[in-house]
Image (tube, rainbow, N blue to C red; front, side):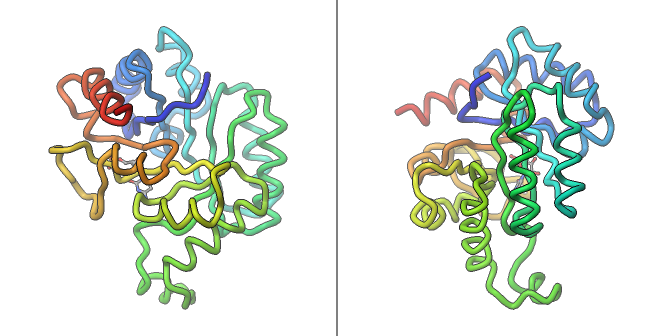
Length: 234
Ligand code: C5P
C-alpha cells in the first residue's frame, strides 16, 4: 500500500466500529491511524482483522510512540513483523542511539514502514517543559529534535501545523511531515487549540494529514474524505 495524504485517526476500542470505519476510509482513498487505545485493546491480531475488513489493503500508520532504551524499542519494532504497515513512530527524546536502533529494526521488517519521530508533545507548553527540567522553549526543542531525527536517518516527524514551515526549511524536502490538529473549513474544533485547514497545511508543506473527529463523526465519512481530498488537490 502506498502512503496517503490523509490518515484518519480511528480513536476507538470498539472493534466493530473500527472495522466499519476502516473499510469506509479505505474505500475513500485515505489511510488509517491506529493508536495506543486500539492497540492496547486488540494488539497485532486486531490490526490484522481491521486490514482484512477492508476490500483493498489499507495504508496503516501505527501510532505507538515508542520511548525506551534502544534494545527494547528495537525489540518492540521487530515484534511488528508480519503486519502490513506504512508508518510507525518513536519519541525523538529517546535519543540518537534509540532512533538509530529503531530505524535499523524498521528497515528489517518485511513491510519496511517509514519511521517518524514525535518531537515535543503539543500538550506540553514551556511551563510544563520547565517543570520536567527542560529550560529550552518548546519551539527550539522541536527544531533541535527534528534535526536530530533527520541526522539519525529517520523518514520524518509528526508535527503541529504551525511547525511545518520551520521544520521544512531546516530539514529539507526529503523529510515527511505528518500533521494532526487539522480541521476542514466549518468543522468543530473540539479540544484542539490551534488548528489549520487541510489546504493551508498542505500549502505550507505538510505531506500527510491526521484527521479524526471531522471524519469519524461525520454522517458520511466517505463524502467528507472526498471533499477534503478535492480541497487539497486545487
Ligand atoms: O479528532 P482529531 O482530528 O482531533 O484527532 C487527531 C488525532 O491526532 C488524535 O488521534 C490525536 O491523538 C492525534 N494527535 C493530535 N495532536 C498531536 C499529536 C497527535 O491531535 N499533537
